[in-house]
Length: 264
Image (cartoon, rainbow, N blue to C red; front, side, top):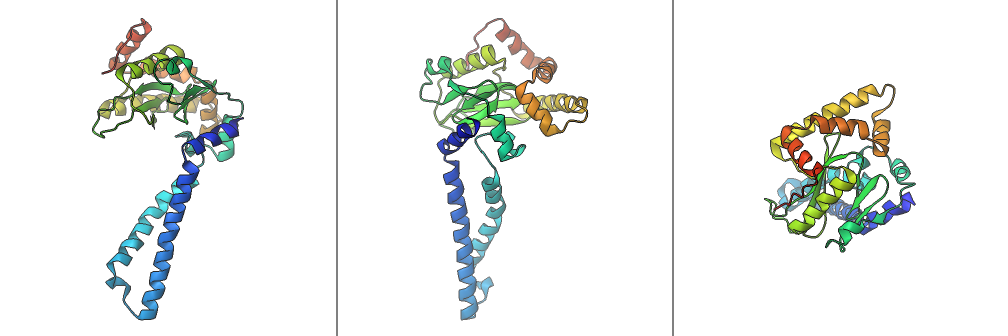
């Protein structure tokens, strides 16, 4: 089940096709370079005199590493964790996970967006977030400096790392509120976002908590610690919440009292 689930998401996000296009494009550049070198050699023309050739060579060199990293990354639908675990380990993490649509979100104007969850994972537009490791999360407003027409979901893990997933559609203020209500009341994830210096501050606090937690797990590798946290992160999560700055503690109390905070 796990392997089929994430393979389906990979195809839904068109990652295999994107990888094939990138590989084809780079090899096309490489073939152009080889053909040009052969032509210049036979004609006796200096390579340094042909600016288009130099541009193609530079383009091939500059794009080689990014394309290689993109192609070699397994399961891009699992951001952050695909940089930690191997292909087989990722499949194992999803082996016993069964996903169902989130009815609350579907019934509140988000029936055309992929929102589903299993015991340990939240699936958002065919990409995955760890429910246990998320401390902060939010569907962000689209009126930003990036001039986005679609709504991104922002999340911060207890490691201090952040993930952003584009929904592919624009959510209204009410839709973003419903998403925030769901992750707070059902997943205990505070629907708040930190940016700039606030993000640096909160990230540093979470990283310190995480590092201390790792050090306490004597004889266990960081990879194994992350694997265990995906299953149960109650202890470090509670410490992160306790140490959060005051400007996040206030919204935490508001949500605990059942207040609905609408985003504008």
